[in-house]
Length: 227
Image (cartoon, rainbow, N blue to C red; front, side):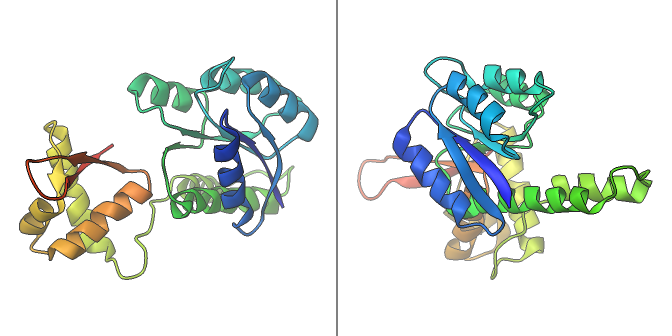
């Protein structure tokens, strides 16, 4: 079993995320922590394989915790950052600190499950390799390829169409704009319902964000932007 420590200042959020982790085959939650100091202590005591780390903590910020963990040879778990922080500086700090993934709250169970399954693939591949064996280039490529694999669209969504929608959304976001399902449907010649399914998939997998635009009357419009 892959041992997981959940770190979040909100007790209920930590409970929800722990429940998500427990639903994924091969993972078990060995503890939770609600401050940065408690997280560092818990890592030393529990020796988890993976830490789900929030950034906004009441004492130390998550990036400071990440740096402390990387400086401790006795316990050096892998880290997935789970946070509401969207600023580029925080994302850059997580990357430099060696975080495997960066998942923006709020997110679905499926979004976390995909990242955990990606981690599980790498964890098992490493475990299957003899510790004293020299690695061939194809072994290294397989490990890094698994670590950074693309998120596969769920059943009913085409990878080819997904790439088309992604390209359109990326282009609109690069120009500083956003996209509605209706605009996406017009650009891709998909139905509005189908376009929205692809856009919502990107949101759930953490690659796009959605916000509501309120008009004068009627329901608010969902606007999507590539992250």
